[in-house]
Structure formats: structure tokens, C-alpha cells
Image (tube, rainbow, N blue to C red; front, side, top):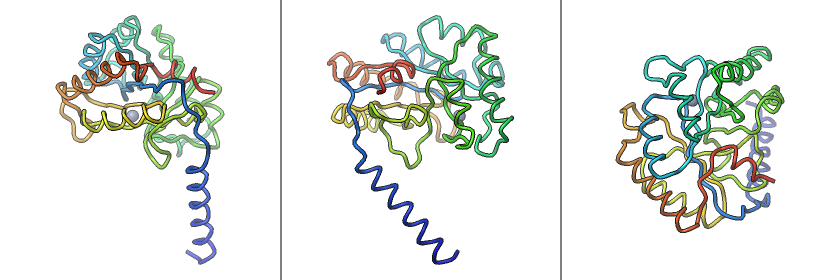
Length: 244
Ligand SMILES: [Zn+2]
């Protein structure tokens, strides 16, 4: 790498950090929390029961081609979730890394997944990028098809603010109730929106797994904070509607 290129990259990183640190972050009236589930695994039904028992909502981002496959929820289960007040979002058709897709394939992932959900009476207004990134050249396609979209933790930070870009919403994956409480305390302090992301619940699978007992503790914390009116638990659509 030439010296000029190295200096240019360092300068871009510094400018980005300065903008990120000093860009004014607008508070919400009250801190918000969203439970986000990725990929549509059957074990997330364990989580939905715990949430339902506590009268809390959530958004499940599902991959349309995976619905009904082994270890994934089927169409009846998704329909049931929707009927019970949970939100279903699209997580593409095939869960490809979108940054490498052609314009046509990029569009197919967005449009064909939405159509497949609609065919099965499921409305999807919100979107989550697989692996957290889209192809910036085709970002307009996301805007044409969905009301908002969520990334996955990278450089962008943990929390969302009232002026966060609704097509680049942050989230954070949690493994323990302790780390969840810490983040929720910070969200309350900053009057920010925390999107707490989970994959498999009560079904062991490497690093994207939370036991049912731990998830139950996490939900109890959310309930406690909501009862104290410190936060409001919302689905992705409701959170997006509060962005300015
Ligand atoms: Zn995913």
C-alpha cells in the first residue's frame, strides 16, 4: 500500500470517528427496547411463549426460503405469531451476503421474499440485512420495499437515537441477563432505543444461543423496567415510527 493511500484511509477513519462522536444524538421521549429474533429458528417459539406470558412484543426476521425447513418455523407458526401480535420482518429470501449480489439478485432478495410472505398472509414492513450489510449502490431498493432496516453490530455503535438513519438501525446480540441489564441502563440514561438481538433460544448452537432460563431473566428485566415506566417495549415498526 502506498503512503498516500494509507494517509487517505487514516484520514477517512478519523473524519468518521469525529462525525460519530460529535454528531448530535436526539433523545426519544422515553427509552425504547425491541426484542429482535433473526433467521426464524423453531426454538424462537420458546422465546415467544415467555414474551407472551409477560405481554411483551417482538419482531422476528425470517428468511422466506427457509420457512418450514428443519429447525426453522413453518408458515402456520409464523401466521400464529402474527395473529398473537408479534411482528414478522423479512431477512431476505436466501440469506446471502447482499454486498456481493448483482443489482437484479439484490432486488430479488428484497422483493421475492416480501411476495412469498404476502402469499402466506404475512405482512413484512421491516427488513434486516443478513450479516448486517447491504450493497450501498442498491440501497434504494431497500427503501422502495420496506419502512426501515436494521444492520448488525459493526462500527456503528449499539443504540439508536431519534435521528438515527432508519435504514441503518443498530442492534446488539445478548448472551446474558447481566450484559442486557447494563445495556438497558445505558439506554435509559441516554433515552435511546436498544434493539436486542437473539438467534436460538433453549437450543444449543455455538455462540448464537441463549438458554431459556437466561432468556426468562432477560424478559423479567424488560418487564421490570417497563412497569417502572423507564422503557417501552416496541416492535421494529413502532420504534421506526418514533424516528424523526
Ligand atoms: Zn441472519
